[in-house]
Length: 445
Image (tube, rainbow, N blue to C red; front, side, top):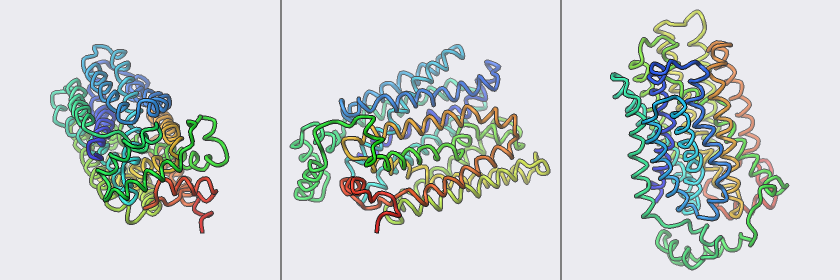
């Protein structure tokens, strides 16, 4: 179930990563300015913000499964339209709807998996979504490289249709979320599903009873998220969503070929090839996180990961200092330290932000809370992506990456003081801690 749902992550990763190579050739065909280039890339993020923020009601009304089926159709149509657009405006409009599809899937897929997974495996199974995102990014880099020699940017975009069709077909075979079924008054059906995917009928009955005990009849309202009892969950999930982006990850994902060209790689193909190495590290290190998240825990991986990100950013600062700029040493240093940065992101903030976001909210607020946190993620993503090239041109690369390094240090403090450990804890137990005021690490004995 988790593997099929993770196809949403492949779509997410492919459609966000493919533009990094395609934009080099779109620039050539349409002679884009820096502002226009940022628009083609960042419009997806604006669409993702809108999709994630305004779809939480649909996740509760239609259910997680139905919404993901509709989302797969939107992915397919919008991706195809982006590949056949004959103007910059057409590309921007189609990519906007791709962004809406990404925004919906980015929180509904991990939400669906978290609600169907047993507590002891929940971290690993939800992390499969991030692994799938990174597989999608690596796949997009491979496609970009394979098609770069002919400049076939339209095929780069169009091939995203393939995983969207596979995702739709796969989701047809999956059950609805048992927790959503209980929430919607279909407890008997939820029990039948849990009996198929739990160790015993007794375990399934106990889980349904716990879910029913945690639910009140009214649905969650947006304003309730800001009340004292729920505020810690919103603060932590939205905070992690924000710092996942402002520490600079998508300047690497979207602009890696551009960065490598600036540091001295001589042509588009060599820059994309170097980017493929980054994508491979992204996948392998996320796979490592999947193996460790339910044994080592969420907090240790976050703390180690963000420390490695800081080291990688300092290395990029070194690569772009005027003394080394353009040298072979700068090229090798930029590639090596970018991989350290990616390693840190992939074992920590990358997968674990989505895990914690899908865990910390009570059931009746879970879709709404995850939607708000995800919209914060996409808003920060849009802000960073839209400003990266202008900041790069005005401050220079070394100062730009030093700015991200400073934000990484602040993020390390946030994780240390506020992010709780949720390894092996049932969703209902996390909810109980939240309501009892024992959510933050320092308040639990």
